[in-house]
Length: 183
Image (cartoon, rainbow, N blue to C red; front, side):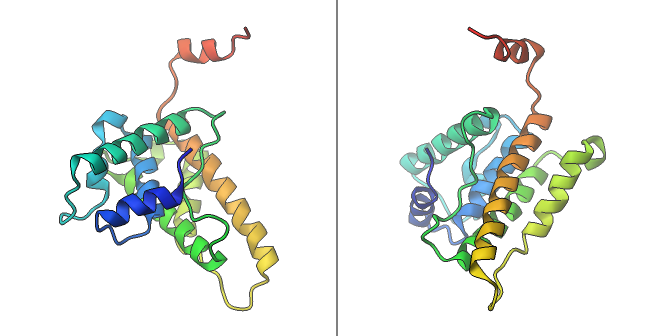
């Protein structure tokens, strides 16, 4: 399973200064629109000064492959890569906002997405993700209540990203029929 800290370490070694969650969000958004082989994960870093070696490129490519597998399979437990629970809630909330911002960036990518052609559900998810980009924790907030709200947002983002992926990458009828077959 992918870990936020592992991705953050790889990206930091490349000189990437943004939140690793933003990169993972951009990767997920791009995967909703393009085939994995059409995506250059290095381009998602959005920094011309970063020129990773072959090992780092291979790690980013592997991240891409693992992420598309997780998005495509509703049973695998896809999760947006966000800081672990030991990290303060304020930082986790900022990362959640960065993940959503990255997702919208990746979704907007090379191929223009016409939201009018999407279902109401996808339009609602995009609207909600746009609002989540402003996620933060205010001083004086009840941390127990906010932890619960954060967990609900993470779950909404997890399911929302998969729903967008499934709508924009519908499975062929033969694959859908096979998945319903009991053995």
